[in-house]
Length: 349
Image (cartoon, rainbow, N blue to C red; front, top):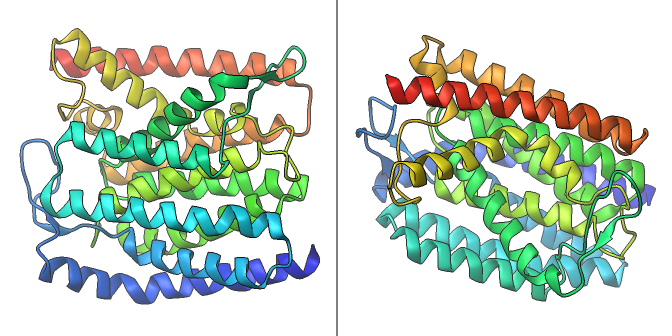
């Protein structure tokens, strides 16, 4: 295991450096191919900003995964990672296509459902749900629909929260750090590797994506981040060196902010009689901006909230589940209430 950890560290450093080097090239390529976010009524950028920035770290991550899976002796690891790389490439194609030509929402949803089905077939599955008051609940045949829903939720939650400079990539850095800690505690090499790689890539990208952003994640980066985060949590739920504490409660906890924002967006659009795929500028970060906060301040506040939930999530691996579940439930209730108040205020304005 020590040998694997050293290789993972070296590859993570290489991803970090490669991302720094690739972002300037990514900016030039995006401009040349006209993959740019033009200012409009549903975006806050005032000038055209290159998109598809996720390529800058996604490609180094995929190469690192190929190298690691090729040299690691564990056959089970290889059987997980090689198919995952294929799905990551499919997700990148979806993201780049959407960033360039703006795919219809329904077609994109069907594509994402297909990704969720493939992930189930290659055994990145949601097998159980955390029960803080007893043994985990095994899903059985429900594993199939729950797995698809899980991938849809995470890919779209990261995509929707990517509304201001540095927000989504910064959240992913914190989420990966939490999952990395849990992976190290449970000695799960695939969770450690995927978390470390995604952390290294997003951390480097954040330098160019934080306000004022030189390049955006785009759907290319947001969907890739959501896919890998969902894969990490389902890999930890597998029988392969299974992380018994990493059922959905940990990623659900640390991703509380983007998940709350996504569900409030769906509720808001249904209540308003609109298509749930109709974009708007009433997300939590938009409302915080309307209250006079700067993009930097909004990002920092959301980072802090994500870190708070992340620390609670880590606690599930070290302490009594009942106590932590009670604390988490109180915090989630408070967060939902505050978010709903913000949403109502934004609607009045």
